[in-house]
Length: 116
Image (cartoon, rainbow, N blue to C red; front, side):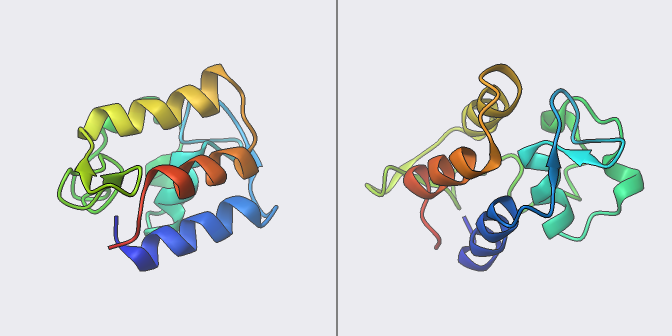
């Protein structure tokens, strides 16, 4: 993934600035990890509010990262490309199902992706 976007996203997840929610990108001022990414990409809050499926979100808004295109994501630092929805699904699972906090999710992103 783009190194600058990745660094900014990790910093935001660890900042304590964002309260966490599940099931939606943004709901009542609380974000899922992908909602934090959306804000880092400059997507307006109104466009993120109550969105439950980032895979089907307007691709123009998340064109660089949300779907994790294989061309910009390398898994496990071994230059293996990840499938776009698989990477996104893993983050949704950590955030929504396993209820991992943003710090843990940031650690996962740091381990599983490299900035390119």
